[in-house]
Length: 374
Image (tube, rainbow, N blue to C red; front, side, top):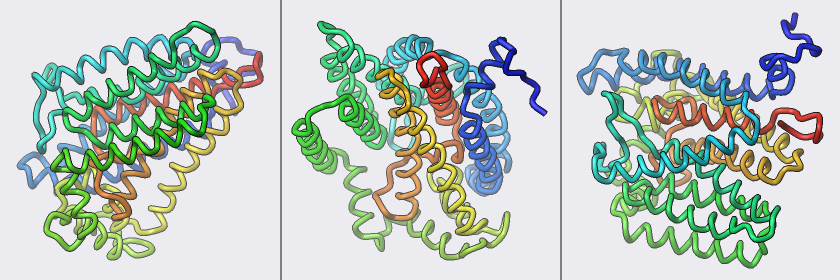
């Protein structure tokens, strides 16, 4: 029996009757799957680096409840509240990402983390959703009011954000931001000729990244030559999928986690494939697809251009990150070093994704006045 009556005008009751509960349930289910897979994949990784077997699992048990709380609180906001918070967060995240160039901690050749009060924070994870909303606001303002320099502002902030990320270097996240910005320009009614020009610039940027960044060149080369020693993790991941078959080897029976350094993070999908099989992997993909498609459908019902651009960008970030992770694990694209949303272990990534999905839920809430969302 529902505990909230439709006549109840309290904040929580109005939220309950206007939020997309199906999408919320799907995201919570993904987070639950992530906890289970982290428990399965992380003990071997923890033992290899000399910490307690359940070091990563315990930390994830702390991150997930905090992330869920952030998502629920954020989903209470109005689009105006989302915009105000994101504009402030964009500036803060950009400054913190810049700070990693000077006082950042280097991990695996990349300087993406700041140590704050004993905690390791990756500011770029928060920069992604903040950029998506800030860019949406700038473009929407330019379309709604003459004289507002929204397009120039949007054009200025995306190379700024992407450039800061490339210095770390973080090519994968830079690609996500550029793709999201291009999608927003397209949805806003940009001429197809300009879209084609942006596509050509994207191809040129990809070629430039190959010759500029040694790690990008290495990953592309190992993708083209999977038999090379550099493609070790991808090869082991493919073997894990083959070993798991249709129903998997069973919880705790996998072997890939014993040899993969990133079994709990970038390659956790391979652990799912080996221990739980193809059926569970398909269910995970279906959950991601459900969240993306349902959220896009609800977003496009709104009449507010800002809501359409911001909501679709947040959903696109979520979906593209999941797609890139799973595709790289299955050797469909070069490895990107991007985590699987809500499934992979990670503090900053989990909290930032929860914040982003909370904003998306806020954007897709029903709004009786406009017939769209609140």
